[in-house]
Image 1 (cartoon, helix red, strand yellow):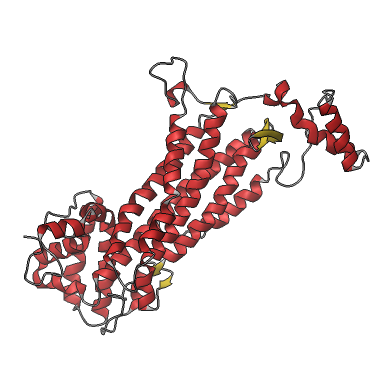
Image 2: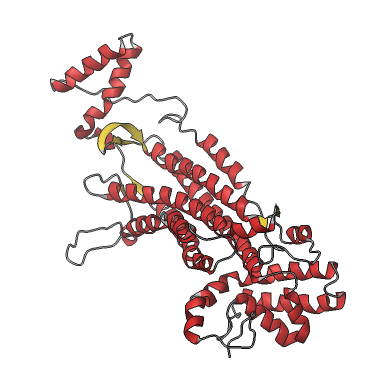
Length: 435
C-alpha cells in the first residue's frame, strides 16, 4: 500500500503515481539530512508556541537524531510505496512514537518543507563549489608564479599577435574565477533565506515564530513575505545555475586551451603518459581525453540557466508540480562541476610547460609591437614607427629584438597575483557557515 501524507482514503492509479513521483525517491536521499535538520528546528519552535509539550519535544528530538545518524551512516532509505523523504521521516517517527509523530507537520506544508531542504542543500553545495574553486584558484596562482617569466605567443583571431607568458595565462584563469565567485556569492545570498513558515505559500493561522527557525537553521534572514518565499522556488535554482554556468564557462575555456596547447602543432604543454589516452590504431597518440570530457561537461553545464528558464517561464503564481523537475537538472549539475574542478586541479599538478617557445623563427613577427613601442620611446611618432616596422615586415628585412619589457599592473612583468588573491580571499569570506 502506498503511503502519502496527503492520503484521503483512496489509492491513486499506479501509472499516475509512477509518472508524478519520477526520480524523486532517489534524488530526495540527498535532501534527507536537511529534512531532518528543518524538522528539528520546526518542532522546537512548535514547542515554544504551545503546539507541542516539553515532554513531546523531548521524545521527538532523540528520534529525529536517530534518523539523522542513520542518514550519516548511509543506512537511510526511502521505502517502496513511500512518496518522498518528507513522508519517510514522518512515517518513521509515527512508527516509533505513535501519534506524537503526526504532530510535527503542524504549521507547515510540504511546499515550505521542501523549500527549506533545498535552501539548505544549495547553501551547502555552493560552499562545496567555493572550496573547489578556491583550491583550483590557488593551483593556478602557484603555476602563474612558477612560470611567470616563460614567454608564449598571444593570439587574436587565432593568429599570432603579441608576446604573452604562462604567468599571464595561468593567472588569467585565476582572476576569471574571482568573477565567477561573484555569482556564487550572489546565489549563496539568495539561498541563505528562510522560507519555513510560508506553508503552502500563504502563511498559517498558527502564531509561528519564523525568526526562531531562521536563527536555528543559520539563515541570514527570513523570506519575509510568504508568497515571495514560495516564488523563490525556481529563482533560487536559476541563481545557482547561473553561478554553476559561470564557473563552467571559465573551466571549459581553460580545457579548450589545454587541448589546443597539447596539439603537436603547438606543443606548448604536455602531461605524463599515464594522464593521457591512446589510439586503437595510431601507436604514437597521446590524447587529451580528460580535458575534452571536461570541456564537454562544462559546455553542458552552461545550458543550465536556459533549461531552468524554459521550465519555469510560463508557470502561474504559487506552487506547481513542474518545479519538482528542477531537482533532476540541478542535483547532478553541482556534483559534475565539483568533479571537473577537482580533476582540473589534479591534472594541473602534473602539467609540463615548454621553455623558449618564442625562440622559434615562426614567432619572429610577434615582436613587431615591441619594436614599434621601442622606437616611440626613442621619440619617433607612433604612426611613423608603425610604418617603419611595417615596411620592414613587407620587405622581409624585419629582424626582431626579442626583448619584452612590460611593467605596468597586470602585465607580463607584473601579473598582480597578490592583488588577485586579495580579491578571492574577500569573496570566499562571504560564503560562510559551518564546515
